[in-house]
Amino acid sequence: MSRAFVNEDSSASNEAEAPEIKIPVPPGSRNYLTPAGAESLARELHELTAEERPRAQAALAALTAAGAGPDPDELAAAKRRAGSIDRRIAYLDAMSGLAEVVARPPEGARDRVKFGAAVRVREASGFGSAGPEIAYRIVGIDEAEPEEGRIGWPSPVARALMGKRVGDRALVKLPEGGRELVVVAIEYPE
Image 1: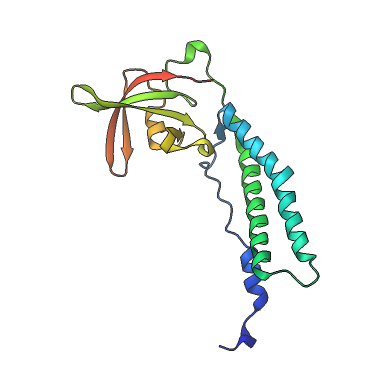
Image 2: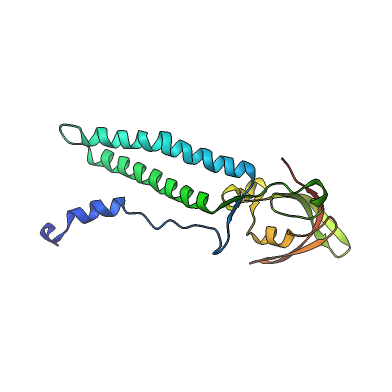
């Protein structure tokens, strides 16, 4: 195909386009956060808007102000970096708009699993509980790190554990089948 029929401007504009920002909060829900999670979100948003974005914009301006014209690869990388920062800021802004910080429950209301709880469970067997203890902390969607035991509140495990007391069994429905967990301990860390 002849280069005469190719719109070179369209390939440059496609580089700057990004997929729509997806908000992982279920429709009609709030972005529940622990106090530490809310602080982390606010800190990241501040760092991006006050430091990273101005730095990326300055780098982009320096490249475009170059007299001989910028290196196309360097310019494309700078545009991608600036776009990435802008998308992260837009995501954090949207999540901040839905944010609701969930405080620790009062002392007398910590006998059930609720948002923010640190829960220790064991796999249930026919005669009680068997296997090693597994620790979970039920946190906000953006705070979740499953490999570190922090699970988001909409996860199947968190949903199954909500409202349970020590000794209660929770049936977790997973794609690979169900698991029955016995609640061993409930704590509410600071």
